[in-house]
Amino acid sequence: MTQPTEIADLLQVISSLNAAVTELTAALGASETTGIQGQLTSILAQLAVIEQQQESILTSQADIDTAVAELNEVVTTVSAQVTQLGTDFTAIEAEITALEAQQVDTTALKAAVLNARNTLTTLSPAVAQITSLGTAVHQAT
Image (cartoon, rainbow, N blue to C red):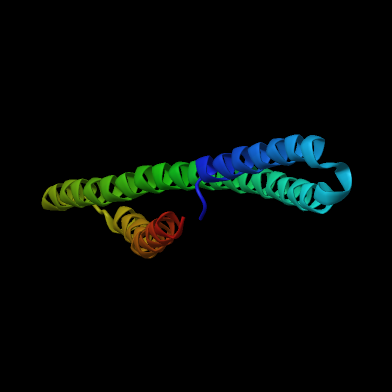
């Protein structure tokens, strides 16, 4: 992609050429240089349009970069929370084992933890996929 400074430099060169043709026109007469000045004016107008389009693209790219950064931040947070849930479930299961040693009926509690752990098991790959997508989008931009 052309850098913004290169477009600005081209605009300056064309503008300088246009000024030189204007001076040449004054020296030689309008009929001899009208075609050149018209072409330079056309090129200058086209470059101005290109510069506007480039500014629009760069603004859009900045918006995309911001959105990707926000997505990555959310994914990092969710990933950390999923990891913490796994740790929490392990601690809960240890407490259930301690209750069972005291002859407490933990059947319902074990079923609830199993359901929650199953949910976590399906959530972990989803977070991994989102992380992968975020990374791919970031690399593509």
